[in-house]
Length: 601
Image (cartoon, rainbow, N blue to C red; front, side, top):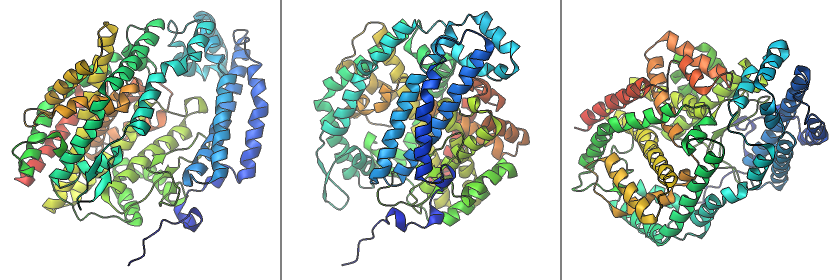
């Protein structure tokens, strides 16, 4: 009997394959001293409460002290969380992580007075403060973001009451999480070898990718049997959560929950509306892709459980880590030598934690703080997906690096709305790179299918979710009940409209709303679709050799929070309030769909 290959322990991993966190704090003792130092400083922060309107100098002093403490807390938190992530079984770093979380909570409490006091300053007075003090003027946009909420912030006592009820407003989401992740039990299914397997959400996803249709069908029907039993409970949690969004929006003087949610990132509602309109206008492209899938799979009826299995077979594309590094450096050349210099620094100076080890957090991410390197966590496997993951996370890290090098601390981060654009632009550049070099029809078909599936899941599917989410809030705002039957009727019709006539209607898919946690996130999912569309357009311009587009793109990477997100993207060459960027993205999708149709005959 062959020996089972074991994951290495953390101390068995080669140092060159690990990130170097000693650049954040030289050792654990230095971290502990920094933690104690901030705890001592917190009372000083609170001393400025009630004084911000006294003078420009006083407002400047308070702003600098608060940002200085926040900056230190972020660095402390990042070290502790990343130490814990590299080995989640290490109790010492579990403790560090908990201490950092408590410090974050204390710091948040100590500075809670700041924004309400800034908003209480008369607008003319605040403008005079900023214009009369050169040092304070460096924070103008910082204050613009705060004062943008003027008219939507209640009195300090009222805001305190709402903050105290935050656990009540999140109760439905928490109930959903416990029910979906802990209490909901799924049945037993068979895998491709005929073995009995306990179904879970993770097993379900793998089974839907199986080439055995019976395995896919059984997983699909078994999963939804469980959701069907609790559909009324799920309808109750979702409807109450949506009702909470609408209530909070109303008491803060917003016209709708959507207006309130998008205002947090200064996003005009026209961005959301343009996305919905353009995706609906281009649904015939998704219908064509569904029809192609049906034809290649050779089935009389295409069902929902047939949407995720590969249609092009496996391609002989494997990458060990070193070959992936070389490929990434070559693929990203269109972004210029200055961009590649940052990528090379990441590879040379141990920004990346590469291999999987016992206890290591799963998945991948780019992390760090203003005063650290933008580190990357991977769990490397030798395949194409991991190459895409590497360039994706590198996109985040270079974005963070360039922002921090070009912006002061108050503008040294970027909004969620902007975050995924840099990473998915890199993915799109890699796709074009591979297509330029691969001549084997089977390999090309595999790459094209990889891209089209990603676009389908990110642009079409997330927009479908966004459309359903908006309907939920509108119905609740109008006083309509959101019962399980009403939710399922609407969702089933919406799903059929998106996927078109070549997808047979499975009654189970009408219940999909019950298992999507994103419907509790309050107008979050549309950003996946806008980000992917913007990235497709940007990458298309960059890979066509447009030097002006490259420079505009790098200016976006350097901008951070120095302007509102929509304005940052306009400078990058993409006006997300207009349909042009979406139309260009769908053109790229169509071109690649045309080629895949031709390759598959």
